[in-house]
Image 1 (cartoon, chains in turn red, brown):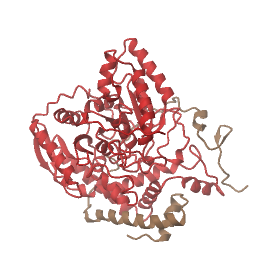
Image 2 (image 1 turned 120 degrees about the vertical axis):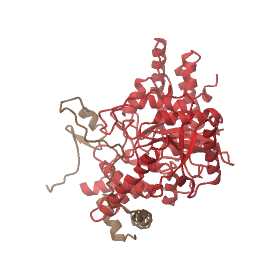
Image 3 (image 1 turned 180 degrees about the horizontal axis):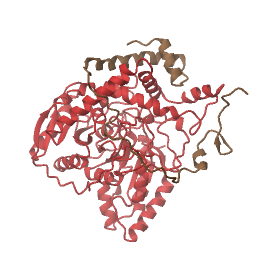
Length: 488
Length: 96
């Protein structure tokens, strides 16, 4: 059996039938990481020893008659999510050597479910970026073309799953950081409703926007992961105390009568013609499956980017104030306490400094009302756009990103062009909606294109089922990238 | 919106960031460009629109004030740059 081409749910079936073991699957993944990750640089830390112990424990649990949605499944975790005993850097030099004393809620859930944690994946520093080029350590390559970015910020997780170096992964999505890399790497990536998944133990970037989300090769893989990580956690006061549906059972593939809204504002500014035609074709496919297509308007879409780039940096400037060389991370000794803090914080990379500066300015006396205050009010209008649209439709269909994966280095000197990669994903984060990206085609260079499906608050099951129906009709996920094996 | 060099120096001070001259020049241009872009929000009439601090619409979450286990002090100090006697060690902030 070629373990490397199985999806998460296919591996689970094989484990249930006794055709393979978690130790065999984990060993296969570790071997593949050794062979292929020199070309991709998707992992920052490979926890092979503990992974094999977890795999052996999962096999024992299964031998004792236990089963579960993720029992024995090897997964990758974005390096912004705390893992007890495994270094966690957030892609930053300011957390070099940091070993978390506790697991994030989502990691507790995965380990309790018997999942295997292969390691920690690369991210733009503090999740600030759209390409992994802002990681202080490495730039991850896209498995479909190693000269291109995998998207970001959760690009390491996306590249690892796309290349068969993990059966699924977790990322975080503050402005599109799960959906956009899923689109660039040909995966399904879901951003849950704010509060659906606890942020406990997730290194904070922008607290009102951050949310953990799963990556899978298929919709069912994502549903299986979401089912384990969703749920109430009193340690995160924004965690929603709402029942967790059986997401896998919701995948009927029947979308007859589903009202699918197509927002006209998402088919204009700067969208690549091949992306536009692939997404339009996918919407036609949804219609052919019995969905009713309705044109909708999200009139304040145009303001999403400026609102996001005031609110996220403002929250980041407050969250990142804690990195002062006292409680964690390295310390750069200066002339006095204040100088030590200033010199230590010089360890932040250029994009993080830029956003701290922007956020500090937007919150400073005299400018608060003009920038942060206006952004909070405009945010209300963007959230209202979605609320109003969901009065008439069940799901919104749109492109995930305006282009396919761009070349490494192409946008690094122009922050605004980099920010545009998230123009279609970040309005959702400002609202109470949820959404995912599902592969819907390839461009002439063979690069994946993503269809974004957005649902109302806590409608993850509905969105997943719409994506499942599409995926069943157009199984783009069966196409796999060919990754070069490089010697170390 | 064009930020002056003094503006950028002041922001860096407020943010406790040691920046090189080169970085100051770089950020002066880039922050001005992003703020110009953000000026797009001035097109909106926001009269009477309430601010949203987050989307979930949650109110205060309260719990019983009871003692529960928390991080052990050795664990809390494990990642410190310097620690002594069960405490984080920093430079003196008072004149001796």
